[in-house]
Length: 175
Image (tube, rainbow, N blue to C red):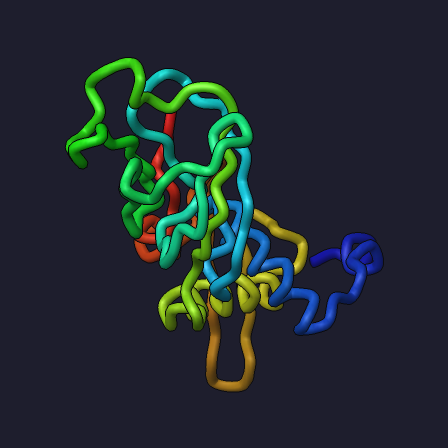
């Protein structure tokens, strides 16, 4: 590292690095992951029988309202993966217009893991540690600490090394 470059680096403490790494993980995954929390979301129905919530760990759906009318829980089903399905009066998947999601839907639900999964914690820590070893975000770095050394080279546009782990917590592309 050149002296000029070293003077432009703003020192960041460990807590700030962890918060930055956490933000990277949440941004990559597309939702908060943990802790468990109650949320309210408003979506516009597109006429299909299914809407998706921005979560992969839904633990409860408290209420669903369509255009200000509270729906009976027997008129919909939900999954842990955040899929809310409109049902017919007989409890089967809706195939008729009257049972599709239309208009404005407000969903009150609880989601997220009670504790951060250990593998997500490990990914956050690894990303934060790379920030310590490579604070400028250079495409390559090398460091030595006593008998230990580490070096890495990153290709332009490369993905997070933790991507394989984080993909299990990443929201799928939902059109």
